[in-house]
Image 1: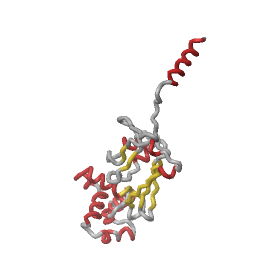
Image 2: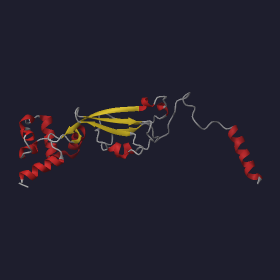
Image 3: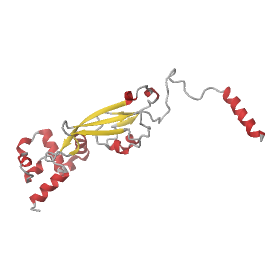
Image 4: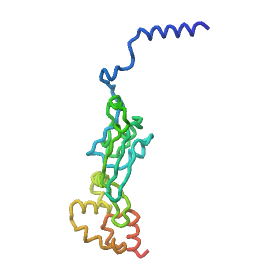
Length: 204
C-alpha cells in the first residue's frame, strides 16, 4: 500500500526540479512543429465560395448567408468555434482556397468578435425564377477545370457569352418576361427552369 504513495512523491519531486514543458507564450514567441494545425487562412484568389468547407465543418464555424437582392453571398468564419481539424483544407475543391497556418496562440483575444472574418462572393441567379445556382467564381472555376468539356453545358456557354459579350444578353431575355420559351435555353437558368424549357420545346 505504501508503494503508490512513494511513487507519487518521487514524481512530485522530479516535476518540482524539472524545467517547464509548456511554452512561455506570450513572453516568448510560439515556435510550432512541422504539420502544426493552426488558423485556417483563406486565399481570396482561390476561394470560389462554393460552400464545401461550410458543409464539412464539424463545429459549424463556417456559415453562409445569401442575399438575392444584392446578389451577394456572405461567408462568415468564426475562429472562436474552430477546432482546427483541417477538414476545410482537406475538402477545398481548388486545393488552395484555405490553408491551415501555424498561428493559433496569436488568436487569443478578449472580444470574440475580433476572431470573426467575412468574405463576399457574387451570386449566379436564375434569370427566370431568381433561384440561387451558385457563385460566379465557382462556375468559372469549373469551366477552367473541365476545359473543352465545359461547353457541353448550356449554363457554361451562357456564362462564357456573358464574359465575352458574343451576343447582347438583352436580346435573349424576352421569353423570360413572357413565359419560358425555347430561346430561353440561352439564358442563365437554374436546372429546374431549364428542364421546363426542354419539356415545353418537346411538347411535353
